[in-house]
Image 1 (cartoon, rainbow, N blue to C red):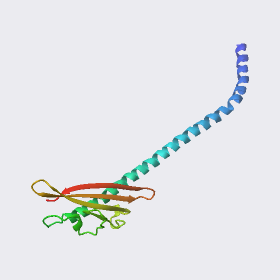
Image 2 (image 1 turned 180 degrees about the vertical axis):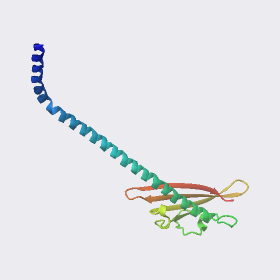
Image 3 (image 1 turned 90 degrees about the horizontal axis):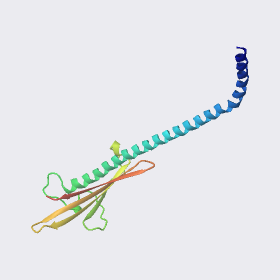
Image 4 (image 1 turned 90 degrees about the vertical axis):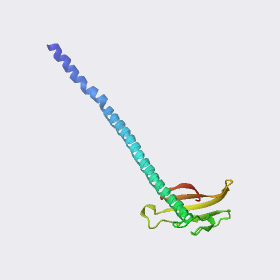
Length: 170
């Protein structure tokens, strides 16, 4: 029994020496954990910011597509007026068109912005109309090709979409 007491005293005397040798290891583990969590936090922040930017590009892409569709609709409505028989050629459009020297092609450029449509502010379109006639052996068939490019400015980036429609005169 006395022997055990002396052994336990020697263990007690050795423990403070071992604790002195291990004092810096807790600090090293704490610094390691802080660095790992900082890197994890930085990657999560980076992931969220790239997700936000991709959602913004997608939203402005849909707006640019709607602007391009508006250009196609404007030209198509002028070529095929409601309540009139037949259709017009691209050169006869009732809309202000810029002749750019290409035969049978007219270019319609919208206002710089859609100021009255809240979802399309900062967007614009450029539409072109090309028409041609094909003879199928029996009659002449008149065709139209309408191309419209919608663009939206989103500050740090621009997004554009192109819509192309082909139509046949009745």
